[in-house]
Length: 250
Ligand SMILES: NC(=O)c1ccc[n+]([C@@H]2O[C@H](COP(=O)([O-])OP(=O)(O)OC[C@H]3O[C@@H](n4cnc5c(N)ncnc54)[C@H](OP(=O)(O)O)[C@@H]3O)[C@@H](O)[C@H]2O)c1
Image (cartoon, rainbow, N blue to C red; front, side, top):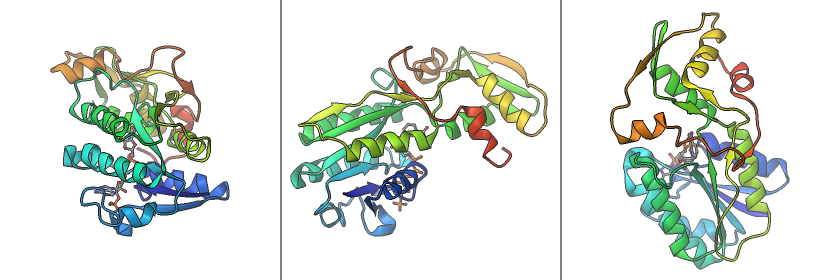
């Protein structure tokens, strides 16, 4: 099967390409470095012609609505016009989350639904790399600052890539459809993530300082609105500690 992968050079997209190729399918990379720009539309029609599915992993949160909302809508319209099944990666817990990027991801999903083509939307929790970077940014020497009950059910990007490949190669829905959310196998608080990161370099557990959540977005994280309700997500992939063991020291 011929499957286009947007953002194929990115963290997730590269894994989707590897997964599709290892299953014997043709993965066609599409991003600016291959001449496809979702904002201008350059190269988009040409790359979709003859494809069965497109897995949409391209994004650029630093550009506001441009790639996340408008680029996704442009892709959804083009996929619908070409009869290509769109498989889109989104984020768990965005329905009522005040973080600006998460609100954009919700509008991106709404744009896909409005485009009216065959589309599968997979929401994933934060990737392990993002949980690690949160913990690093909130750690200052031996001290880790945490906010409320800040926690992650972070997921292995390889597991997400496998599910995206399953959707791209599987039966296509008639219109917009949400797949079962995906998440990692365990919930870790921010201090637990920081402890694992420090243990990797032989350091003891951090001293934890609790800070108030400032602003609505931080409060939403402090209330664990990024963590799926028990039993609602398909869980799998490596644990954070297993993932960390394969990484260079943080
Ligand atoms: N990180 C997380 O914890 C997490 C959790 C759940 C879901 N997600 C979702 O996963 C997706 C992928 O994240 P990622 O971290 O793998 O992204 P990434 O590594 O930043 O890669 C994004 C890719 O998008 C391409 N791109 C940017 N602007 C473009 C444009 N105008 N037209 C075409 N391509 C463009 C870039 O390639 P070029 O430079 O070649 O254009 C880049 O390689 C995002 O949608 C994100 O919301 C992430």
